[in-house]
Length: 290
Image 1 (spheres, rainbow, N blue to C red):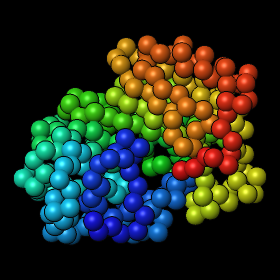
Image 2 (image 1 turned 135 degrees about the vertical axis):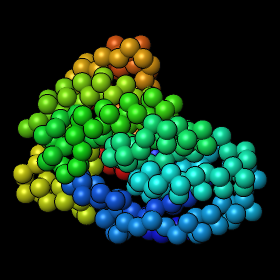
Image 3 (image 1 turned 30 degrees about the vertical axis):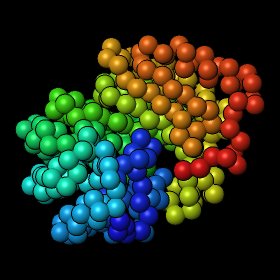
Image 4 (image 1 turned 90 degrees about the vertical axis):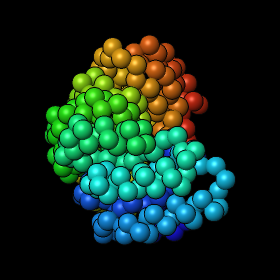
């Protein structure tokens, strides 16, 4: 395969064929993120994208999942995406699902009919980075989106039959705003009703603008124990009727949490409480990674 720069994908796409439909991130202004700071956003030449599927077919006998990168491939028009999806169907007929990164604005711009068209032609899941439910924190990290827009986007995906996987970041409010981050994020998840929630824990590389705020003391990171207290508060504020798969088992997390909400809410809280009482359960800082 032919890749440009660093390539990122959700943990659940570990065994997927990854193809860059776009390069970089169209927003690329979030203060905590360094993923695409080395790239200028552009739409990749469609012919190159289609050729990649031919290359993959020659190399791999069976490809059951495809993931379209980079940061927000859903920014592409339906006409553009349909050329890619049709290529997948003809070249990789055994493919069962296509995943894609999407921003709330990407999703909102599309009509219900366009989203249904994408779902009928292979898009099974869209990954959206929400990060926080607090409007103030979202503004501070230059996310460029409001909680209300995230709710609208998630509901549009749900209505179109596309699974929604939404990511949030523990510790993103720092010591000053941890409770606001926890409470408002829990409330936002309740309103969004996503299919999946992934909870990472803040780790900042030097390329990210937030790194300088941490070094200067303007932003204070939470301790591992404070992250767990925040996570418990977040979970307590989630009120869902429909099933939502909850995962906080990323390499950045201090403990691994897995469960289905609302059914496993008390189990998740009990696991956190046990970890707070037994420090040996908390991952050493040396073993955390992005």
